[in-house]
Image (cartoon, rainbow, N blue to C red; front, side):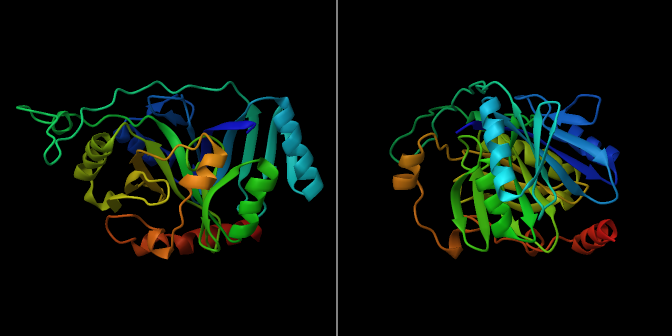
Length: 311
């Protein structure tokens, strides 16, 4: 592939301290310089102060200098804005104003997590005379940043930028509605949706299993029920369990587990990428998609912010 994993993202928000406090409740580790991470992969979210919530950068790991040179050449051929800074290639999508920063980094093997004991099933009890371990588990930090969804005023053009310039691959898409792209073996690392202005629609943290999702989300909701957005449920596209909460800046935070893995492109295209319709866009099961997931509550604030920048 050349690209092999998502390294992180950078955002600006009006109240970095409030977001930092929220991350503390989530269990993320602060690096003392505006960065936060889960238990795996180090610092992956960087927070700065800005007049409105905005996604600034997405950092992506590449295998070698040849991968960066190839992306730079594609950018030149297609007239895309790009620059080199300290060996890092900066590629800016003109429609989202997000800069994708490609850098050479070693491939990383995520530490393995022991599989939970199998569930009791009709006619096949696996756990006898004991409670399930999940009922006594505790909330704990998520593992790593897995993916994000970016709102673009021109979904098709932003999709083509990711595929044709940056070097992502397509996993699934419904034309004009959503595109799921990847730079790793995860089903998606960056998905795109249509939006009146650029925005970070949500970003997602991987958990060990469904109980990890449930315990950690419940901890945050018991502290403030207004954080609830959408879930619990299971997506069709990506197959993952999900639970979405609201962060204090206005973006949605997803806790997820059991994401599809694509390590054979031909196998995925032949057998994995099954057909789907509009009824599958939200989920396979779970609550209905809330309106604010499509039209964020702070949309007018975002419009004003982008309008001031353009003015």
